[in-house]
Length: 314
Image 1: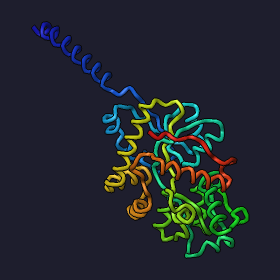
Image 2 (image 1 turned 60 degrees about the vertical axis):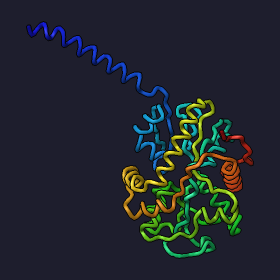
Image 3 (image 1 turned 120 degrees about the horizontal axis):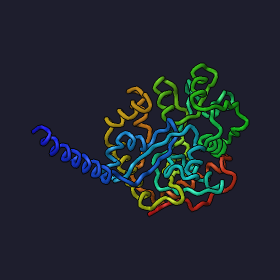
Image 4 (image 1 turned 45 degrees about the vertical axis):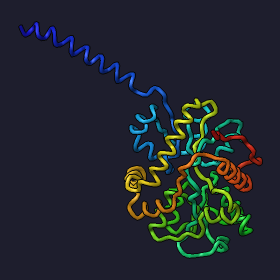
């Protein structure tokens, strides 16, 4: 009797499991988007990563996020087709074109959040007498050079510069081996939470040169041959993530604590400072990015005047 029951039940179980596996397979998204971003660099991609399952289910795509130690490595991966979307500084897209490759900006994600930080209240003119920590192979340094020359008439190349990656600069700054540091988020908020001072922010410097344009910093850039449907999905996901960032502070606090180990004071400062864009790319943003490129070119980051048609406005 038991054998007869098992003979009936076992096939039913096998059929049920098979149907379940088939349904699971076909219900999974078969479109995939691979993102590349800088390790330790904040963006709306943090929201997408934190709510990965939600975004995958809503938009019908599989999401993979790869984090790189150098922006150059992100660009290389994009050019080779190893990633689909790069979350990088706007000026680096021009750098990609300058090297003979192509990438198309599909969205502006964040405005400039860099700042010039010191241990005490001083004026910009005091920089000529101090040790200044910078990271030269970045657009941030190129724009620092341009800002100082165009606004204050200071030749940065004649200053006492200490060139190192951010973590090393911060150690030197806290050990009093560096007097002033030129840095970006989340490092800025960490320093401000310890009581250090802002000499100038990049946003305030930008307004002195280009008051009618946005000080764009981070963009989403797609590889040259990415499927237009995936471009649209990415743009829609990013806007939703940006709106979450701007409206759900409680969630962002959780994200910043998890991914960047920031404390409450640091997060409070960062959330007030960082400006996330929750609108699509338009002509005003395009013209603003061209101004960013111009500034980077004048600062020596780009070797030729950038006039690339590197925008995906649809």
